[in-house]
Length: 205
Image (cartoon, rainbow, N blue to C red):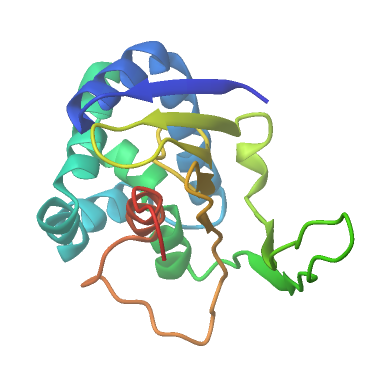
């Protein structure tokens, strides 16, 4: 799987990613819009709804560094901002379009006390993710390696034009996502991709 690196401020990261992946971002947006149109949904209407929704204002207010990354990515790739919003707010698009999502499983592995010449082993937590992406993402998924001004480096599963799906950071914090189809969709919170990336800037739970 391709690994792409991004470092610096949100604007720095977005500018570099947009320039490096301009063609891939354009192709991913085209594929997503074709998928939406083929399932009877208007990409233009969804893109406009996202750009005019509180989702964008909340992201700009709560995680300005990540919002700057999105803005800079669209500008550097020379693609419409609404296309990058469709790619980044994929979970919200799923919610508005009523499409299925992903699943997560987790377990705590008990440790063991030390004895004789064996040191103690602390308990660990493991998480597993089924990232149930639509067919248009096939061959497009990649790993984004981020190095931030503040916070631990992280590895993020993503695809061109999206800031992140799930991941883990150098501090040992992992973030997975799960589709909760019984929970109402809200356009007044922080988008899932922004929550994921923000959590990965933290050093501890």
